[in-house]
Image (cartoon, rainbow, N blue to C red):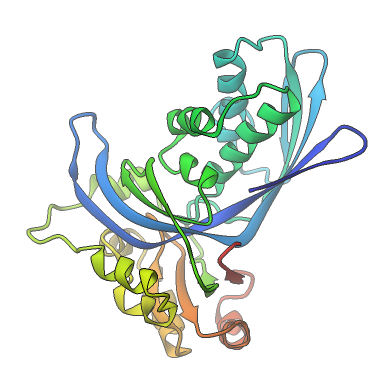
Amino acid sequence: MILRPRPDGRLLGWAPAKVNLFLEVLGKREDGYHELETLMVAVSLFDTLVFQEDESGVIEFRCDDAALPQGPTNLVVRSALLVREETGSRRRGVSIWLRKRIPVAAGLGGGSSDAAATLAALNELWQLGLPLPELAGLGAQIGSDVPFFFHTPMAVGRGRGERLTPLTLTQPLHLVLVCPSQGVSTTEVFSRLSPVAERQSIDGMLSVLSQGSSDRIGQFLFNRLESTACQLCPEIREVQEAVRGTGLAGPLMTGSGSASFGLAASRSAAIQAARTLRERFPGRVYVVRSTA
């Protein structure tokens, strides 16, 4: 994420999306969650947030997407309430404006990224002085993906996805994201997931990354949730067939869906593929790269 103060006292934040290059489900845990092993990369599709301290002590949230909840079920609001409660800052207030650009229910982590940006912004705006591990710990209470956005641009996630091992990406990745016309419920995808006899190993993916062979990443893309999500949203397969037809590596669904991506050899190749895909999926195609 990126935070920049303005002369008028407001704080601007840019919250990136993420994609999963690898996602395996290792089993169901006693707490009801699933044990995961995943590789996440932050990409250059951003929500924008504006934070301004409110001396009245009110937490006010507004968003340009009327479909998003505005109350305490919203992850931004939950994050603000949590950090205020956990730090004894109950009299502190903030006005938050969210300009939503990351598609929802797409597996791109937009809500989690917004939550992480909120925790980091309030830590700065309210001068709380919380260290990064503590912010990430608060984030884990909000959602499994939230801690990742304190460890971008790339990390392996284990546990629920919140136990992170940061990695270095030696070369930028160029991707084309395509969203179906409908989203997918994460809860429903996991509830329909069937156990598998043989698990996919992340070792091949980690090996090509350690060698700096980003051109071989496409050989090791994997997402255990993909087939289940496709049962709920058959349009995912339609999107992937179109992506494959452009010559991009992959494609692969990210997270629990419904967005898929293909990997391009260069930005110009990504732009060319996106031009073709936009004829079929207008308004739902994004050219992005891994963030620095």
